Image (tube, rainbow, N blue to C red; front, side, top):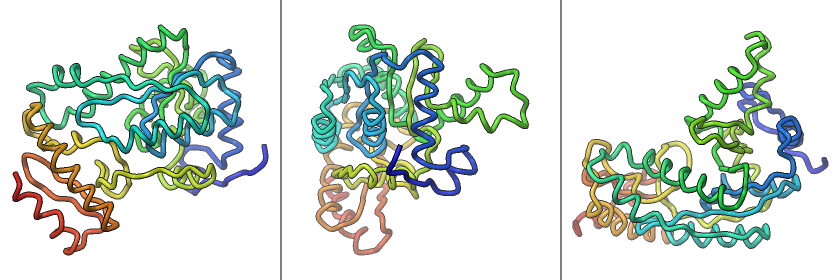
Length: 296
């Protein structure tokens, strides 16, 4: 495998992953060991860099990438949907766009703001299981990286399934993390090509595969990392969720991100707390977004 890319020290030392060629070799070995080499894969394609890089790796390895799935709802970003369509076209994979608005509105009513992303992810994964059954696919691929909370349960699953390996030798188990039946309740294999890959290495992989992603320019839910999703992540954690709140979040954050894109920074507004985040944290950026609060 030519055209290699060396990973940064964190990925090398914390996840036993030296470079891209090793990642590809580990992935192929896992598919062979689990007898999954020719099985259909359906992809959760958000339109962001993580799922895009995952798709690039899977296609480069010649895996059976059968279908991309991009979930939409009333409050999701059109930019992300358009990017997902472009990516599916580039890699020659069919794509569908299931609408989860009704289910999301129903299951979030009365819940707290801190629960919004967990509820949404649960809805999407359950729908992916249904789609996998219809498509006769045994593998669901996601763009989850080493940053995600799921990385802990994934490694614990590997440890439980290799109980004969002594603690001092567990470093080798990291090589098995990319394909697991985690979460266990779904009883299907999840393929996460980037589950060992650190944040900055994902950016380098994006450049390596020449993937150009148009960003929404929202601040994201992890300060210090550029992670985008949808405006609903900006619900105040302690608030009660309502569709009226979702409407307000979409309206004001759509305007905030339009200003941010035009002026070369990132911005988000949390409601109902009316907290502004701008990156870089400069007064001129803050003032541009602050004007929007007068509309609420």
